[in-house]
Image 1 (cartoon, rainbow over the protein chains, first blue to last red):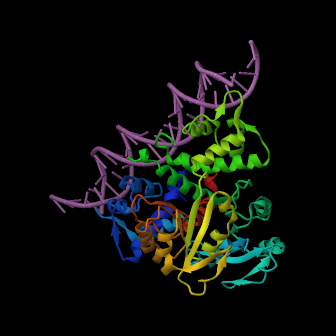
Image 2 (image 1 turned 45 degrees about the horizontal axis):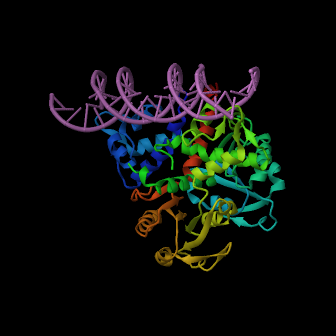
Image 3 (image 1 turned 180 degrees about the vertical axis):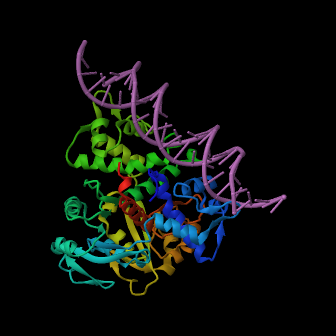
Length: 215
Length: 215
DNA sequence: TAGATTGTTAATCGATTAACAATC
DNA sequence: TAGATTGTTAATCGATTAACAATC
């Protein structure tokens, strides 16, 4: 769709724009200028305009941006106009938390299957989806259309599973295991490394303790 | 400790260095050069050396870096040589997942309390910690030393809770609610926005569908 | 000593911000 | 029309990479 070479920094900001515009939409705000939005979001107006103009001119001189239109356009850029079938591999607390997160469905992400090795979990139903034996995973993938696999399994299991998923044709992996998956580049991996996030927090907490760091 | 003005990009990379060095340590690797490490991590050796030299010279010419020493030094930079008391506010699946994640404890993060509004959850014990009524939160904080509050509550509750936590003296918030908390700058907020992570994945999946994007 | 590899400076590259003409 | 605000180019700033002298 877009030309090419959108920088990673820009893509990282898009979901945040989308969220702010969604909030404005809920408050029935009709239009917003880059300046107003920049004040809310604590970024520069210049950055907002530059970011958006990577994808096209969504605004109008002298007016600003129509909130509903811009929200919908960014949604399209993010691929939220499509539906995605998700399976969750690892039905522990984290997997269940993802399965229960209703908002994902609102964005077009549908949980179609949950898998685990634990016999205690197999057969349990979460929001209408039954946890299946992980041994049935290959067959499930071959007979269902699965776009994304969320990996919420221990680190020790992640690498092999990711390799299998790639082999079985999964195109997107949402990886929660604390490891970098080495898989073919046609598979897109998005990592959520909770431990690293917590370490960043502790870094900032402990460097703040230091009085001379203030500015 | 360090001079000042470490860029955010550098800090974001530190936990990943720490993880790779921990893996090497487990494999009993004694020394590693920036070149070898750069190949494993798929970054440039230059970047590794630049990053580390923000904090001091940890290596030795002609030898490289001692894995154990560098691991421990990065741990100190990240504040992992200290212990942190954590409370988790919101004892749903996500809160429970965090409480159950044993690895955090290994890094010095100890879950001291779980809080919820749901009477069904109050009294339940998770890894030896009982879920308490959120009404007792203020008192708990005033009588216990709490460093970090993990916020795993719905978006609608997050803003007020964060304001209260700030008022009650909490210095670090690990925020899982899909919103940007507006709180005094002496409180450090680290966000985990799962919905935004998933949107980045769908962006990459849907832009990959486009053949002309290949290079 | 010779070889290897760091620490660090300089060069390049990319991302952010500023400025302003275009235009609604 | 006059005022406002975009889209876009140019200037600045910061981060990454390259290069190499220092040194183990």
